[in-house]
Image (cartoon, rainbow, N blue to C red; front, side, top):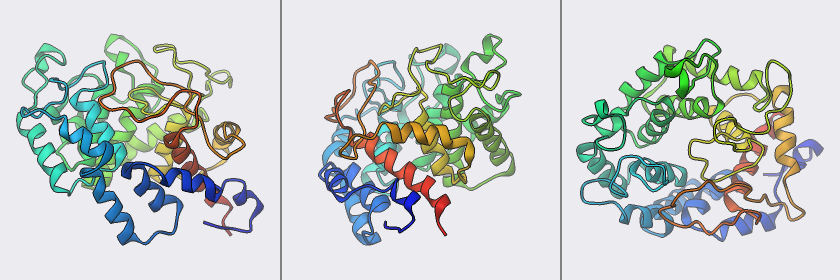
Length: 330
């Protein structure tokens, strides 16, 4: 990844950062190889295959119970439930076609319900049918779609819950009429993964693009009404300008950029402030720190500490910058 364009050079990592990222778990390494180096596809695929048998990915798979669940539940607030583990495996890029992934997902599909994890009326829902909250259904839908599961019921429900401003809000059932960034990003990720997995449909694409417009009109973290930056989330008090991994249901600016990158949105001037924010956090060694860690019990430790350089934040920042830098390509 090289260029003589001065603006592009401002976004490119140095080799020492690439080497640091590569000195990591296979779940990290294969993504660095695929997105930040010129590694041949065969070598990338071989490294990705190791996610199922080594390191973080294998450790998560080994924690699954015979009843298909992780932590004995479909969902909890502790970040180690079935839903949260599937999200992590999605982030790690576990190959959905691999035998370990197929076996784990078959157990979830055939055995796991929402009994004891969601509203009583959802007790008998199969896991991939979801429950009632669009925030939770978005996360289930994103992980399920990535792993090739049938989440059409979740997608149909989410399409029917889109608000007039283009976003979504878990509090809509309590009268909220304006969208929430937190809920909107969860739903957008689900719709995108569904389209990538099952193919595009006009109604899904239209809804997703309306949701993207909701974020872009607000430059990813500004109030549309006043033009002022939104420094902290009202509901969870999380700072949207501080980057976390995993994010779970929380929105932050880097997560918004990651979504737009993955969706193939063409960057424009509305992202200037968000990109400047990302660039401002790079340290003198070309790395980014972990700035937030949400309370809860992680099923495995990723070895990262708030305030210290983070491989996950650095990888995500670099691929966002690479995507943005393409606007300067001649």
